[in-house]
Length: 144
Image 1: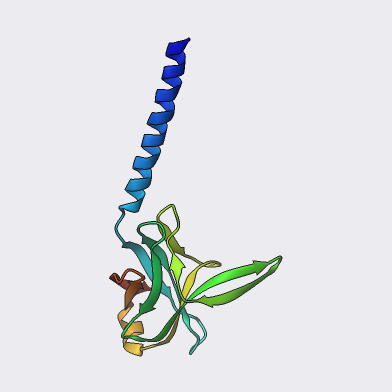
Image 2: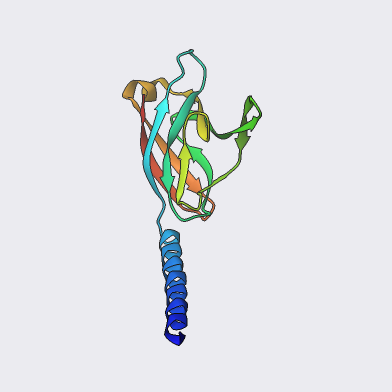
């Protein structure tokens, strides 16, 4: 019987160590943009939307997105109350424990106002993502 108890203790300690290692591994992820696209609004003069995925350490916060070819970029979330959903502007978004910050239709997204015609004609909008720790990432988002 004493051997069985030691085996259980070892299994618990090993599990705790592996959990800590995987948690440390997730925290050591560097910031990166996997993909990002801008979807133009069909109505002229209306803002475009930005969708994509940012990966990085859990808890890192995106504070701003900018572009020399866009007048203003806002970060939005969707708040739901029963069957009613409304868009709400936010000042920052945190990367989730899984290591992703996802922008998609019906959820987190960017709103891009006053896009210059040259950018729309080129099919690419350069975006700069600024984070709470001072890091910035640049990404050329394709226009779809």
